Amino acid sequence: MIGDNGGAPHASAKPGRLGTDHLLVVALTLLLGGSVVALVGQHTAAQAGPAIVLSLLLAALGAVPMLYCLRMAMRRLPDASGLHGLLRAAWGRLPADVLVITLLLELAATIAGLAQSMARHLYAAAEVIDAAPGQWLPLPLAAAILVLLLGAAAAVLRTPRALLLASALLTVKLGVGLLLLLLAARHVHYAHWIPWLPSATAPYRFGLGGVLAAGVALLGVLLGAGLLAGFSGRVPRPRSQVSRAAGAAVLMAMLWLMVLAALQSGLVEFAALASTRPLSVALQGIPQLQWLLPLLPLAGGAGLAALQLVLLLLAARVGREVWPPKSGAVGTGTRLLLTLALTVLSAALALSLPEGWLPQLPGPAGLLVLAAVCLGVARSQWQVRAAAGERRLIPMVLSPVATALCLLPAATSRLFLPVLVVLVVLAVVLAGVLLRRRAGRSR
Image (cartoon, rainbow, N blue to C red; front, top):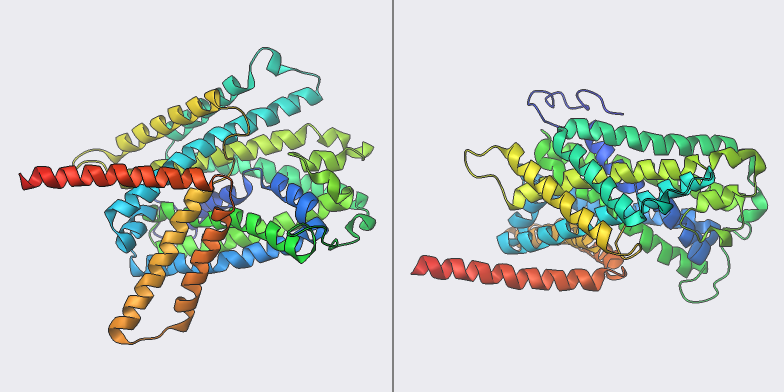
């Protein structure tokens, strides 16, 4: 999945540079590495029915304005170091610091939640072969150990090597999914797809309202491709490479999830998919494919490991922008310290908090960061229009639309209020620190 140049002729000119193929691995892992298939199954059972494929199409279309704004933002600031640079150019240092530090905290919590889910997947695979590791290794401890192992890999390996490992893990997940698709397609019963769009039973439950509600939740997942901009400082042509990789990943993820959604809703009544492992539920009634049951949680665990690795790399990269190395210091040391600090924090969260409390996908903080970038593009367009009287209809329309589409899934998330509280607290603390510094300088 990863080549040497990644479609970028100059990527290998400088050590540590990333190519378009590296970015594609990051974007696909952000979109497909987590428990997104389970999320699709749950929304199929609760809101959309077999018409979940329409929800996925709407979610992919909703991600297009954000990708356009991201490209415009990098076009205005081609040498930006990443998300922090884009935010700083649009809103100043303090708002950029507040948003990015909140994102770092959310990434640490997400890594811990992914570790708990990964341990649960591995325990489920062991139970299929009549093993019970939970009797001698509690799940929280196993999750903390997994975080420490992946954090050590992210700290020791150079970024291209770490992405190669993530690519191998993601290939395991997608390979098992492809094998399942090839073997289970002949067992699909078309009767399970009827009615394709169930009649509405309540607001936002089936019918067109349910399709839209599921589309909003899935939009929050596909918008995660925008976090790829955190690596824009590592590529020679960030505007073209990031936008291409993110756009290709959104399209590939949409098609892949559509196929799997149609498959699992064609194997069993869609109401039965309200599970954390809907594919395993779909295979329960097919004796010929029972041997696949241990492979599904192993594949899910591999995808979760890949996502944790990518999030650690992303968090370390974004953290270096907030706390850049001092002049003359080695950037590798800063990256190592940030990775270790995030690993320890995530391991502590995985060990101390109950399963289900932590997020398992990048959530409101990442969406708020992307909304701020899109709103910054809209603001720059308004300033250009006011100064020169130039009217560019597409940017002026798409930028506010992209901002609203980023805010919509963030506002409907269960973690939105906690994230807002963290934002307010950080804003107050950082503003106080800034005022003290200015007061000290004035003396």
